[in-house]
Each structure stands twice: as C-alpha cells, then as structure tokens.
Length: 103
Image (cartoon, one colour):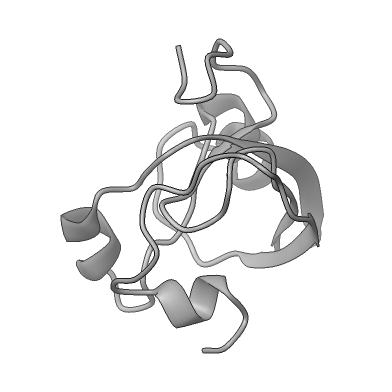
C-alpha cells in the first residue's frame, strides 16, 4: 500500500514535496506518462546522492515504459498538471526548489 492508502499501480508517483493527489506529466526523451502522487519518497539521502536531486520516484511499470528498464536513475522533465489536496511529507530539503519550479 502507498501513503495514500491505494495499492501501487502504473500511475503511482512518489514525491517527498508534492501533496498526495498531485497530477504530474513525466517526460523522458520523446515518451511521456501521466502520474498521480500516491506515495512519499525518495528518502532525503537518495534525493541528495544524484547530480540533479532525485525528487520523484516512478512505478516500475511507468519507468519501464519510459526508459525500457524497470529500475533506473535517469533525468526526466516534469510538469505539474494539478496540485493535490493531500498530505505533504516534507516542506523543505534537497531538491525542494527544483520540485516547486524554482530551481
């Protein structure tokens, strides 16, 4: 189960900074997918270990659709389509400004 109480599914996106229920478009190369923030993550240590902070986790299925591999660390583009009204895990930290479109 995810932080939202829903089971993990294709559309599941995790973010430590975006409210649960946020809808986001994720683009890698010429492929895009729409996800919904249903979970929290990655952890602060995981966010900070990348050259560009890792501010979003995708379901394994969405990752495979976009990149061809179920598990990977890649640079993606994102566009928040609508903000959710659910809980937020963290209101500050590594990558926060990037997640909020200020970085």
